[in-house]
Length: 489
Image (cartoon, rainbow, N blue to C red; front, side, top):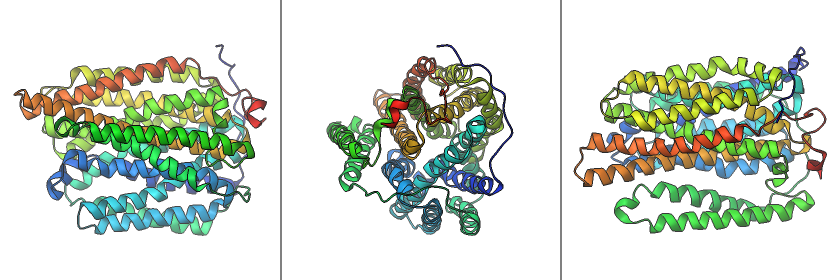
């Protein structure tokens, strides 16, 4: 497990026209992904305003992520079949339309539908950005470029709660979407005027059965996890059935892709996992995204419901962590170009694990606010060291013809992990809270215990990331087409 030697970074060779394409995609991706977590701090607000439970309210985030997990596997096909410019226009138009509907929504049901429509547009944007960058950016500067993508992935969702808290401090929740709408509309207009297609298309066909299996697979698992929080009162039967259906559907989905990829017709080509680097990176993505999104939804609940902080203070407490990831994105990308992934991943995963253990062991009704702030900054620092190396090493280890499938796979696993992490953390919190209340504890003490339990599970998962980091290596030759010639067959 020797690390590849330090490399000298050459100047950029990306044309001005391609540079503009990348910038349009980055701004658009940041806008749509910011919207993923903008509901986090708003959950206590929405519970009171709409008269819904915590488990139901978290579906405004979980349904968004679940929809993305269902749509993203299709993007591998879309990026092969259609030019990137019309895909971009359709995706941003859907996102803008969903944002407008959310701003006008009279209640929970319409708001949930609007979030799903937003997710349909968001789902295409990230694979589109990753595939474009990995296709047109030379190997020697991919770390820096992927650092920017890492910033979009980590900073945008981290800033969502802060922006939400600032808005909700003075305005109704509808203004969360009125804030995003003009930005989305401007990005759409700019893309229509300046965007150009960068991919080569081929006349492939979509396998409808694969889409159906993916929907039941990912949907069943996430729905089952979301029901575990309510099972303390109503029994776990429906949750178990949903998870079993999801697992069976996913097994059938995998089988279907293995059959279809023999004639290069898979909806999601699983040959990307022949790259060991790609497979390990994906496992690490799952761990990190579960921790990131689980924390994003639980920390506002803890600071508001347990510590009694205002919505504004709760949102501002997450701001330093988001800024930390943003400021480190480019330096970490440049460091990857020089030293490779392992010197960044090992300390990064150690910081993530340490932060999760702090949450798991110290969050009580008397915890000082600065402890929460320091732990969140530590978590953000760790994630900043992890995301960029994982993006660069995973996609760079694939042959060019699998770039679209690789980016779709990474994005799919990210969103499934985020949805599962959100559902799992909230469900564990709810189950433990209910059991403690039944045992005579106060609501505040019981909820703090539930949040600690959720972070304990997250901390255990994060420790696995440290082990995985030891086995991630820099691709031997991204320019030459990937980690191994065997991947091309």
